[in-house]
Amino acid sequence: MSLVSLWRTNEKPKMQGLVMVAALAVATFVSASDDVQKVVVSTDAYNRLVFPEPYSTIVIPEAELRDNPVPTDGKRGLLIRPADEADPFSIFIQLRSGEAFTVKLAPESGIDAQVFRYRNALTYPQSPKGKPAQGSLDC
View 1 (cartoon, rainbow, N blue to C red):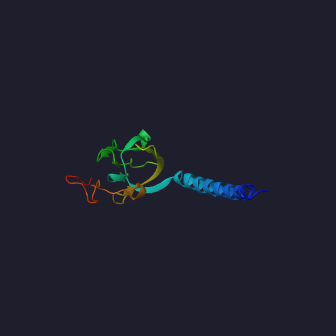
View 2 (tube, rainbow, N blue to C red):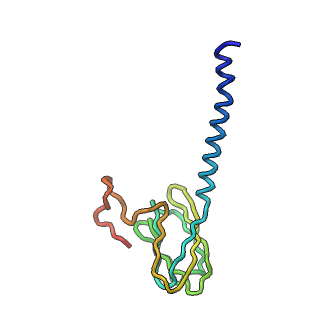
View 3 (cartoon, rainbow, N blue to C red):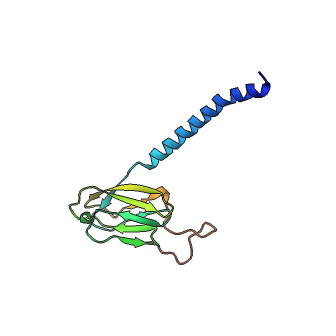
C-alpha cells in the first residue's frame, strides 16, 4: 500500500466525520430558525414589530386586529393593534432576503405598547458609518 493510498484511506473517515458535524450544525441552525417567537402585545395601543431589513410578505389573520396594520420605515417595521378580545394568533413574515419566520402574538389589555425586534433589529436605518441615517424617524 503506497503512502498516498494510506493517506486517502485515513482521510475518508475524517472527512465523513467533518461532513456529519457540518450537517448536524446546519440542521440545528435551521431548526432554531423555525422556532416561533412568542410576544405579549397590548390591545390598548399600537405595538411595533421591527425587522433588520424590509419585508416582502406578511400574513395576518384579518379577524384578530382592531385596525389595519401600518407599515413603517420602508417596510422595516409594522404597527399592529390586536382586537380587544383576540385570542393569541400567529403572523408569518418573509423578509426580502427570503428569510421567513413566525411571531405568535398574545394580546393582553392593560399593558403598554410593546416592541418586538427580530434579530435585535435597530429602530433607525444605519448609515455606512454605523450611525443612524439622517432624516430617519423613529416610529
